[in-house]
Amino acid sequence: MADYAQVPSTAKVQPKPFKVEVDANDIQSMKHLLAHSKIGPATFENQQTDRRFGMNRDWLIKAKKHWETTYDWRRCENHINSFPNFTIPVTDPDGSEFTIHFLALFSTSPTAIPIAFFHGWPGSILEFLSMLDLIKKQYPDPSSLPYHIIVPSLPGYAFSSAPPVDKDFKCEHIAPVMDALMQALGFGDGYIAQGGDLGSFISRQLGVESASCKAFHQNLFNLPPPANADSLPISEQEKKGLERGKAFRDSGSAYAREHGTRTATIGLTLSSSPLALLSWIGEKFLEWTDDDPSLDEILDFVSLYWLTDTYARCIYPYRSMFASQSGPSSTPRFAKQSSKPQGYSYFPQELYPTPVSWVKESGNFVHVASHERGGHFAAMEKPEDLWGDVEAFVERAWVKKDGASKI
Image (cartoon, rainbow, N blue to C red; front, side):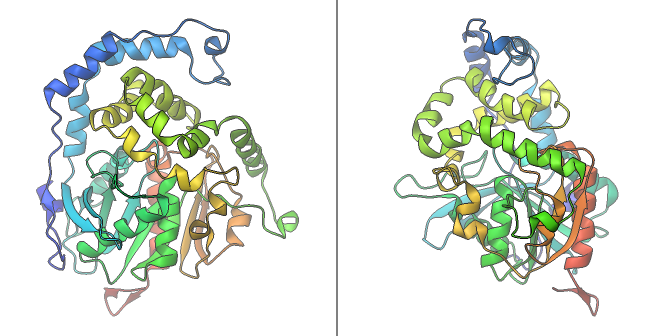
């Protein structure tokens, strides 16, 4: 692992090596709270197994018992620590200082292409662990790795510092912090951004606003129908995807309105009970994926949130994105178009699975791929597919000249 930890000599700021090591008392406290948390009474709604009303009570009973008695956080912790971890200080354009945590696979090749992968909510760096395993297997030596892979924890998530409490900080303020991270690592001459969920908006904003971000790839693209939508081809799978998107807007997006309008209340409420947090977040992993993740996978995400006090610190982006009914596409900085090379991966069980033909109408898309399986957490659910798409996109978006990689 140490070989992938060699920071490029061009870095402007030297990041500090970091090891995830949650205090045993914090783990014990979490389990103590679980042991003393009661589950609400059976109701018609929580007895349904199709999840149309949300969390199923029997699933929660089973999950609580496993989390409290047999779940092993150290297993997850060891997986995180199997990759080089760092923290680095950065300052945003408004002068706010942040400490950003990130995972990295640094190459020793002088022509390595920097790629930043951005998670969303209720995701985290954990989304990308399986993909990082694949990359290490594909490129077992850092000299053969043609990329610098950077996976940050966004401000307020996990081991990154929280946004300031003495001034407003919204979704549109994240991208400049991430750009500052890439600049500090010495990638000011060029890098590629990739993301899903919140990370897709960050990637697009970087592509629009940062001269250093030379291309960007998304696996979520919330796009209204283009003017010529009726004349564009749409597959049967994509038609079902549009129906899924409408159903999500109608009956699955209330959480986002709560995040966006009563951020303080829901943040304080779910920070008081790990079981409540599991019910709120676990529902999303069960509903937004193609195949249900394992119980341990879900508990890894929720445990990371609980053990790092993430939840209340991380839902601030929704105030920009869902404070009104119009949603994220109405936010100007996320809706702007770019002439830079773009890529898109279509996964049918995404929340907003925008048809490929619509996407192609909206910009300079040099690579678009459509998959038969996969949902909202593509990096976790289908790491081979997403990574294959990103490599194919980079091959087309990043032009090699005289042996050196340049856009």
